[in-house]
Image (cartoon, rainbow, N blue to C red; front, side):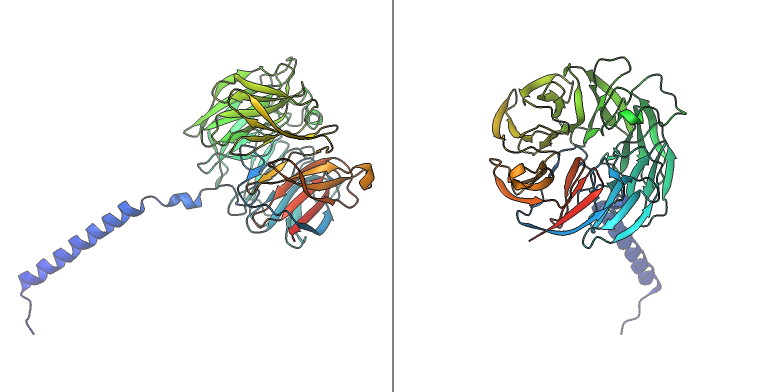
Length: 438
């Protein structure tokens, strides 16, 4: 066997080092920065009330049309916000209880409560939010809190007021809006504020986090921000309803999110009678949908808050509309409402269908398979008063199935659709109803 000379050995070592460096450089260039996998993002289930950050009430997942009631439980209190569903079968609810635990996590498959802790009471309209690691973000008067999969606190940070349901901003950051008009961006890992807080309401006492909380459930003027904002990653736009002190009604404020900072872009009082419930943003982030106190459904431009169109409803919808990426808009619910849908035609709305025989009490939950869900008033011929879970076809609104909710009382809060096609409905008196596909 031939023996290498000293010069040949040195050359071979240098060549191997050069090839290794080149391979490492190519690998780095090909892979790029992979830190994004640790960024907090919405869970693949139904991460918060109304589903995604735009409040669309829509999921691309296939919805089940045949269901069976799997289990029911009571929170032993009241509920003002809908259930959040994680991707791994967890369910979280922010109840208001006279004593004991109030914020709780359940296993949605079998109804076993995993853990429960007590939050400061008074903020039941602010629901929880799941991220893809099953961390939870939820508010209490004066603070925003993050929990891991156990009940031990990850972080707790002070805010001015009671946080509404939080929203993810698409870059791992968290949008927190309080009922007193403070808007903040948080780093989800450390709980640190990013950028500068934005105050939408002047003259707020920062030491009184509970001022006006009693007005929030009914959206009265003492609660400036009574509903969660909508955020679209597509257009980096956030929209929130604000009832300014002394104003005759609540209007809308549009904001842009750039580089970790929120900036106010426009204010709109185009809905002169005032807006009700959370605004909703279209899939492309270009249109804001909101219900007015004037019994109309409104569509506004997300760039400047100017009116695109409005459509008469003939009733006062007290919950947000639900919107598909194809532009089907199903109006919200409440007492004396009707299940009504429109198609956004750009500069006007085309009536799609209307059910005058159905009174939806909650916002609709829409699935990509053309199935919709809503809690509706149980008609007298079916044993009413009470309520049932209606499964309907989104093409024409016809009933696919209906499931009465045993001993359902109070208001209808909402319906959430899990990644596993499980359907969870809750009522204002704290009852949980979980349905599995049949």
